[in-house]
Image 1 (tube, rainbow, N blue to C red):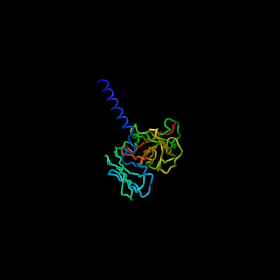
Image 2: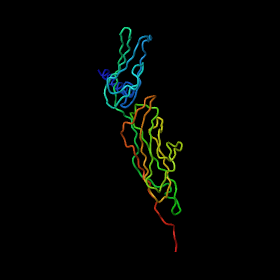
Image 3: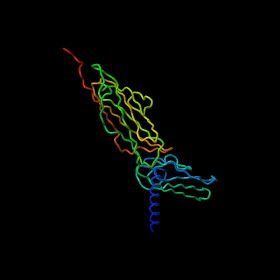
Image 4: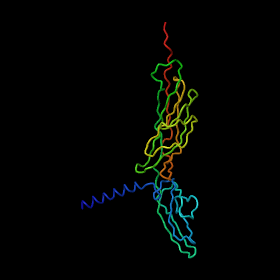
Length: 256
């Protein structure tokens, strides 16, 4: 009895692991994703016609009368049926194939670190009165997803804004890569799927005794596995604000 119970528990555990590992494919698509479905038809294509349909939960993207089809799954979770019919128009005989598909909850989203504050990079240095200079603020984007789901890359867009006129945007880099320019808006940032964070370094330039807020906002998060693109599910805080604190505005030393 003990051996049977052990076997049963092991089997249940294996099935549970397997179901998680199989998540996010064409049979268990995340809400909001698109997947391809195909068949190999009869070798004799004479007088044959083909037709795809879906019982609900998604829409066919493009033609439905070929041997493959793309289905855009919506946000309504549930179990639906994909149907393919091959008909011989000369005899009116047909073959039907069906695939049960369960649209599951999307686990993927990106979010920013919490708001924080920092001193100017020149803190603790001997400076001339009224000094100006650059300082770097670091923002972090977090990847959140089901651990059992592997992806090739993840992408996002972001924008940078600097409050007030004392400071100007001097440089923007992601993950110590190439300079991205000072336009303030950046698109299609790509990060390898094995990385769980992405760092945005923003350099601003201005007087050391003036403070400012710098805001980074992310958008359009996508996780990519092969040809399958999974959109951000909308969870998480997409904005991080770092406050640059001014250095004390101390005068030069005077003497009598």
